[in-house]
Length: 131
Image (cartoon, rainbow, N blue to C red; front, side, top):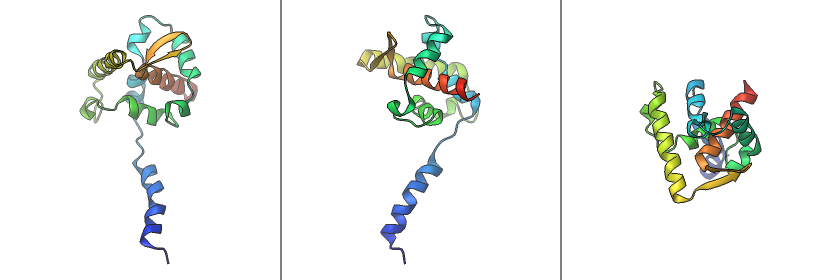
């Protein structure tokens, strides 16, 4: 017989798997496109930045989990049940500005970027490779 503790230990990994979010492709694309960076970088630059940062280094195994991190602290009603792309863009822009103010930056391929911008580039690259 399995003890209650043993059953709980077996159920925890499954609970994490079931709790994993999967985002609509429109939400993935809207949250992944680095709007601010795209004003000074080419699409090739954005893809190169994304390729340079492996997903595990950013703490997420795939684009969906990285998107969850990008969307953290953004009200859900901005992207579910219906995507409001312009409002989502504003929230992400504010998040990027705050990261720069806090010094939460990374240098990737010579670009000084906020953590969110790096994540956006990685998801953008992930989408490009998997589409």
